[in-house]
Length: 317
Image (tube, rainbow, N blue to C red; front, side, top):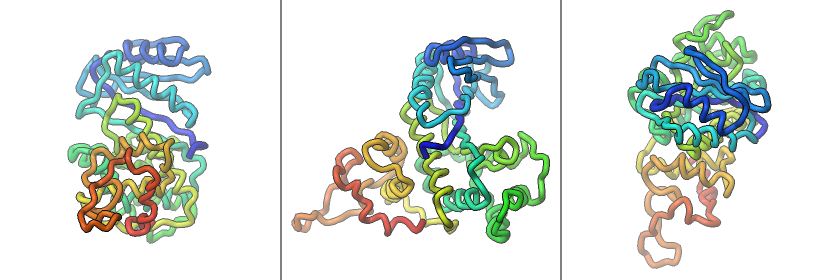
């Protein structure tokens, strides 16, 4: 996952685009240029951070979409600094804002894309709940994976990206358009065929640097797992709100988001879910008292990174 390139779009309200651009400059250096159409910060590496208007945002002139340049895993700290600077400049998130993360599609062949689609479809209800995606956004801007598309994909058993293209559009589309209606899915493959990136649109707006980093890490881990897997199942897993925190934690461990390095990411990705992260339901105290154990917190599990011992019951990846 640490070798994959990515880009991110962060929609904000509360601050003008000019103010956002100067805030970004303060975080990354370089120089600012711009006009009524948008602003740009060219950092010392020659990369362009853009702040552009978006008509879907509620803030009018006091809104803007921060569009990063192509980034690497090593740029995560710089990205966090940009998010912090934007927040200090008055940027905030509301119901009209979202975050879109793009992964470089150049390493994906038909098998990798198919694996990713199936993995996401299998866990999509859990992903949507963990990320707190609103019903309004699910109905409009980040729809679930289309059932007809999945049926076509599985029927074709694609060997080429052109096969995936035909399954996605329902026809061979040799000239994809940026604003094709198929783009409004949580997993957007129109972006792959139009610009060469796979877009993840599930994320609510945020100007919390830790949340943004966690979202990027989740997307990169999903992409890396799809690339490394020989095959994947698309069968939807049963969703149980009472055990969702445990189920999603096990899934995160399965993706490789394990250990101290990803502890903060797990905290952010699990915080909206019910239940215990350490085990399903209730368990008896290991000391044999016959009483019910107290669910442990993510930060108090110590060596039970643990729950991997129970991972097989929560996963059929």
